[in-house]
Image (cartoon, rainbow over all chains, first blue to last red; front, top):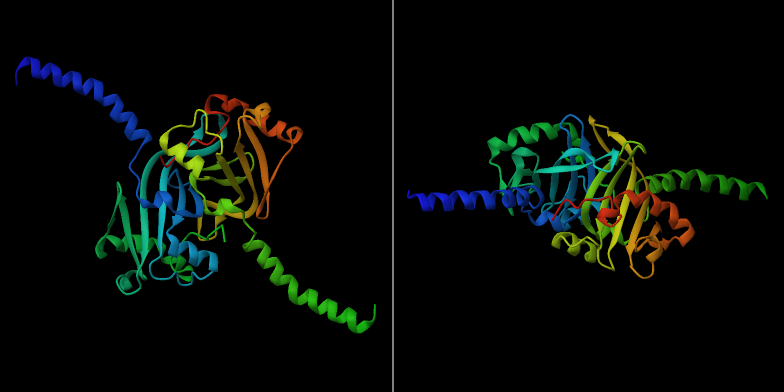
Amino acid sequence: MNKTFFSSLCLAVAVLTPFNMAYAETKPEHGEYRDWRLLGVSLRHDKNSIRAIVGNHVAINAARAGKIKPWPDGSIIAKIKWGERKHPNWEQATVPGEFTAAEAMVKDSKKYAETGGWGFGIWEGKTLKMLDQEKSAPCFACHLPMKDSDYVYTLPNLQ
Amino acid sequence: MNKTFFSSLCLAVAVLTPFNMAYAETKPEHGEYRDWRLLGVSLRHDKNSIRAIVGNHVAINAARAGKIKPWPDGSIIAKIKWGERKHPNWEQATVPGEFTAAEAMVKDSKKYAETGGWGFGIWEGKTLKMLDQEKSAPCFACHLPMKDSDYVYTLPNLQ
């Protein structure tokens, strides 16, 4: 590597890094859930995490009709997670900090019969990647206490 | 009032009250904000209140473009409020309890020039009722610390 190239590379890193870091902090790439409508919100004190729960149109229509025991095939419920932080101008308010992840439950009673009819996935940028059955097992285990609500913790709030 | 009519009335009250109470608890009538997309969520510990903040398409487009200093005329930001409660199956989670109110900030820099360009309103069922200038004054006073963010507490989270 010659010195001129190395200097240019260092300069490029110095110039670009703050921009990229700022971009990563304020502009994560979001999936289609960004345009979905709201089902609920929650704060997990045991995870220091604040969440919004949104649904695709199948899930929203089912929730509004009160037909979610079971949720119909085609429903997708997305959980958008941020770390919690105090609002900088109102310290008694907890608001979203850094974006953590967006996860999905996808209802297909045949395809995902082994895990209550739900497939579990996570968005990687704009793409929803579904977990295989082995990796879905711990997700499903955590949802077992909600069996009477078709394994869904969210109790829809905007019927 | 004759006895037959009185008995019928009591029966009607007995039959209808549980239904109406259940309906009131689970199905408040919501305004158009129910179909708007998400800007943020918050928990106000000083109010024991959990909130979702959504915006009309003008507000959402502005937030995603990062053009919210100031928010453009036509923006409407809705704050949907519930009392907080523990999730019945996960006690370390705070989730919405009873619906409290849905309030709005409506941007019209000329019409609401006296209150930072924002009009303040509250949904009564499906109808958004705007407050007069006198009743808006305390709302605006509470938003003054956010002057550098065009008087809006919500820092949009899904750009």
